Image 1 (cartoon, helix red, strand yellow):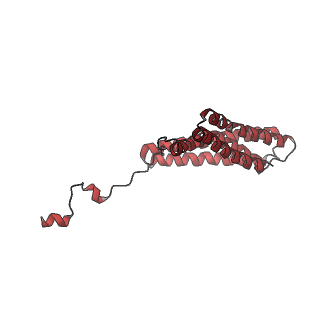
Image 2: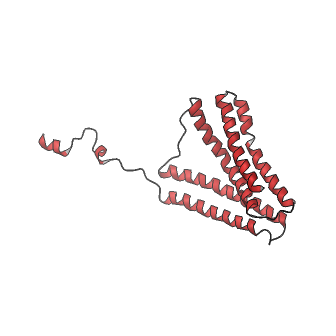
Image 3: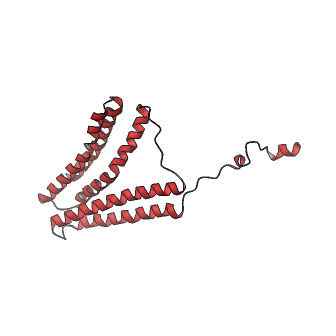
Length: 198
């Protein structure tokens, strides 16, 4: 049941996002569009309540309960980012908005971007770990909560990987490609063969 609900919540997230943006830009109803977009957090509340109710009704804690906690954590930290990403592209396509700003690709700016993305991932892992710990306490039986503990270990791995990725862009920043050799000589330069004949 929990897996089915997670899938339904994910589908509902994108349906609400599309509906909200369509109302905002196509139907020229910004307030109605905003109201629909503000319904997004309700989906996570529904999933949280349903998961807690499933455990309360005696369900054995398993992979799906941990997955629900992880889904909630990552949606809380990445949901707003995804909405802004989609909004910028929708505005550009249908409302003559400015072109979406692309993430920086090189140097310090790229490193800063990667740290921001890592911070979101670490925040999601922390929220998920907290929800998982609350579920462990709720179950009250260490033997039955092994699958939840396993998800907490995975969240620790997410934190480590996120830090390593961000640190790699800091220590070894990605550099822009070198300009072609022909352009380096300047716009007025002539091939060597022509210079020799002049």
